[in-house]
Amino acid sequence: EAGLYIAGRLERFWESFNILEGISWLERFIQKPESKNYLAARASALHTDALLLKWLLQFAKACAVAQECLEICRTSGDRGGQTDSLIVLGESMIFNGEVETGLDLIQQAYIISLSLNDSWRKATAAYSLGYYHRNNSSYWEEAYILFRGVGDWNSLNRMLSQQAFFSVLDGNI
Image 1 (spheres, rainbow, N blue to C red):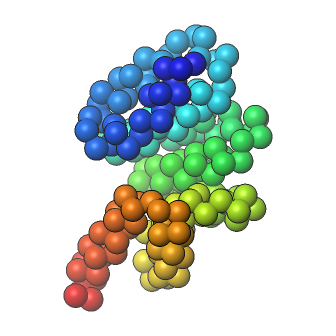
Image 2: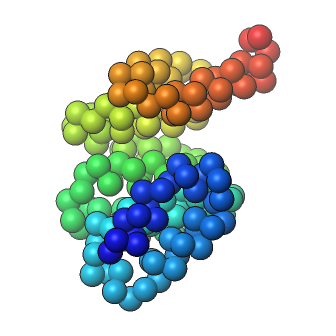
């Protein structure tokens, strides 16, 4: 259980330093049969595994892992976990060519985050929606305010970098 939690909560570490090692540790713990006895810890590890797989462009596998995470979160009533897994599942589906289904999943995550009154998750869903709806800047404006409000400077930096990148691509700078 501890290994699942620790490996799952090192998401930003794995993203920044060694995605492959992160996946190796996560899958080592996830594949242990006893991991199915600790559903919350397993969901945490699955979520991080799906995110890292998405970064490695392994979208089909990321979808399968995120789907398992979503099922665990739904069964256990973990609405925050549902939000997180819907976002990574939706993004992975979009990159895998299933754009409309992916956008619907991210929109579901946004709606759940509203019902939870969870500013960070709402910001994360708005950021993701803004990424895919570049002509509707209201999502990123909302995410900007929320990320600042919760003090998530890393996500705010990532979002502002994406905005600048798209402005250059779109010829607005």
